Length: 335
Image (cartoon, rainbow, N blue to C red):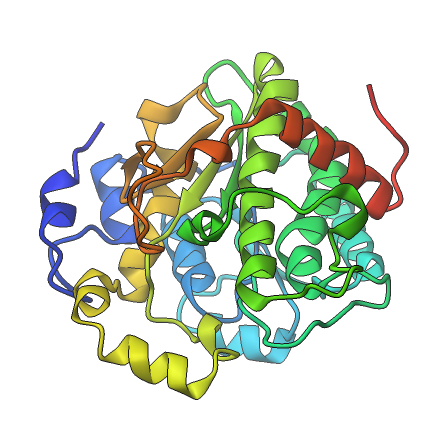
């Protein structure tokens, strides 16, 4: 397993010595090695989703790429899009109907999926917004859409798994899970009690990503379906476009943040590492950052920390969220 600690120990800003997604493919010797494998990636119209697709495309995988805005995605992907083994699929993350339609479209084309990367996400809407299903927008987009998508694609992930290449789910989470100490109560996931706060909402949705990965591993790891959660780092993308101007200005003056900031190719590196690393074969239930397995640290209060909070691993809460999520997306209770 390649070691990338040196570059991350003394970051110097975007484009520094920290690895890119393409470097991960090279270091892992994966050029062309995913030929015949199927990868599904959500959120490929901007940001690290594009670079993730580019890197895994060079590995030879067949890609199904979802986006809310297909014309925008087509422009974003035009430099490397290969229609012979890449397909764009419409999916609006705030609509469970759209998620179901996207899964159906993909399953009409393939009955095996080797890697699912839950990349799409939104961050910090200042006012409470609900979907047509009554779900808070962060939780709906970042968690519930991916939860339903996974459940629908799960048979294909299980079918694809083999002893030499077990299936993987990669949840793109965030250090933002550290902003608070857990999930809302089951009767207040969507801030029904009127206590909405943007950072709390975002934090809950990112913690839900981690919990989902952990619970997938607990339920399906023994049958060859593994799940990992990833903190990509502070990445220079448009995901923060809903932040107040004063917050963006303050961030722009934060020298610590600027040194830790990654460009998009670097921001996609940990996701790609999670998807293809030979050292992670057969492993799951891990929180990854900076192309390594992260450490626990409740004392580091920086939201840019690559470490995870102790409550990021909580079997009881993971099981509660799983059960409640089944109900929220309209699926029957499972075992």
